[in-house]
Length: 134
Image 1 (tube, rainbow, N blue to C red):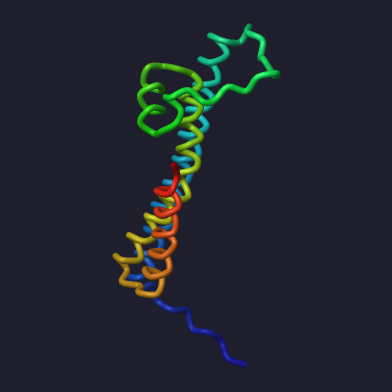
Image 2 (cartoon, rainbow, N blue to C red; image 1 turned 60 degrees about the vertical axis):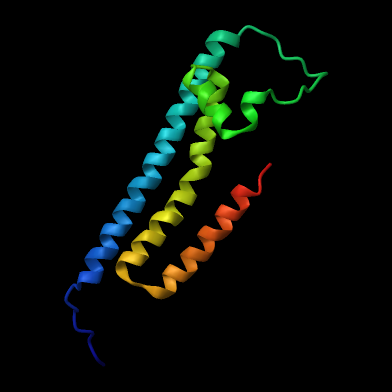
């Protein structure tokens, strides 16, 4: 029966821990920012439109500001509740993509070629899927 000798920490371990800490912070910050934006947008939306009745017999197309990121941003900056809710959802959707980007940068810094390749491929797939949207 052999006992494993405790190994001494290497510089890579410190880099791994630092990278994990940054990614963990980014994920928490993204989710909290998203929740705060959705809550703020819901409060503003309900304050302005809470008493109106929905019309379920017609489904109009989305208005122009909601068809692109620029429109959502400018409308959210103008204080429109619905746009702020959409911005919160976009932040929530972007959070995992930011995690992949941070992983890629971290693996480049650690010179881990296999994980640079894997995270790079995932990043390219994410970018291609986002850029192919109309």
